[in-house]
Length: 475
View 1 (spheres, rainbow, N blue to C red):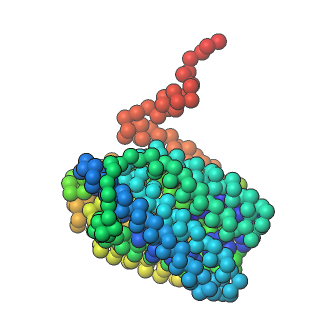
View 2: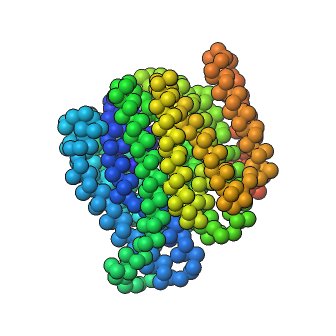
View 3: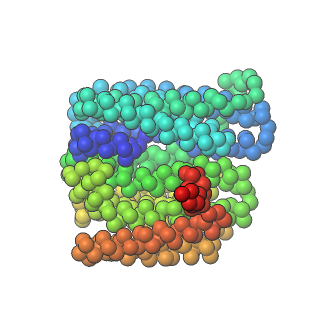
């Protein structure tokens, strides 16, 4: 469970960098257990449901849904029990003392809630019930934020864990509300049948668990290392920079992935279709992401101040490096989904393991050279290696190459990113700001026009129609 920008704003204003760092350590400590207990169901569940839905066999769909719900409940309970059992050890290894045992134990509830809600979200996504999925996520975030703010305001640092639990509680309530509306044919599924049906879930889920565990270990290792070398406030600044740099693009990728994964799964054995879908997603992802990425590069110090406080401005340089890595994540994101759709679980796990080792090695080397800024530099290096690696793997697997249109977008975007970043490093602040804003506006307009051509729609007219701006003079 990640903390959104809006929620980190609350922690920043009420508790400062140290409070945010404390929340980040709680999440990463229990998150590792959650990854193991989660069995990769948030991804493998989507694939399994989408595959069943593609057969149009209502009985198979019903059996898969029942099995997914049961296994999700089991994974949530398992995660909760593991955290309760390991609370003293997690407290000592993460915080260096036993003072946080109760807090870690209480965080076990977040694993129970997220385990169940992940299964429900996978159900909605696999059946392409995208409207319900988005509503559950947005409303859960809003209601959770309102209640959790009260905990932090009232209890200060003691309210951090109740704040995190409240967020996950509202997530499960909203996902359940929409998932219950999915109608399936009545069917009796025995536990023996559930275990048989779950083999596919768990086989692919093991690969996802391995990959996500590597990511979780990297996040945990990074925060603990930063805390040991630079202190709790540095952990808070890093948590803020990570949340800010990944939030916009993360939202874009999540929105696109809700529909992309089921479509890719249904065409997994048709390499021509797979490569076309990957290119289309890459093109759209770059066009949607580039204005936000450029704006973040240009305005990093002001954005940190506005979203958090002046105490976080020193993290601006970290954000700039991280946002470069985030853009590479956009480019490589559709490539990784091909391995998921084709069920290449072992290959997927191996690639993620290599990526994790590269990330940890980069962090160790770059932190020694550039301290906190080194974490951002390591992130950019890691995703450069990952992108190159995925291009080679997909070329060998499906004959994938980027389309002419994708390259026409990729080349100028990388040039603009390089010029903007260089401006932040070598130009006086005023001229860097002028250059960055000019390029951001220019790239934003160009991206909008390209998206309209790509989608064959007039986005401005759609916006006018949606909000009632007809352009007519009624005077």
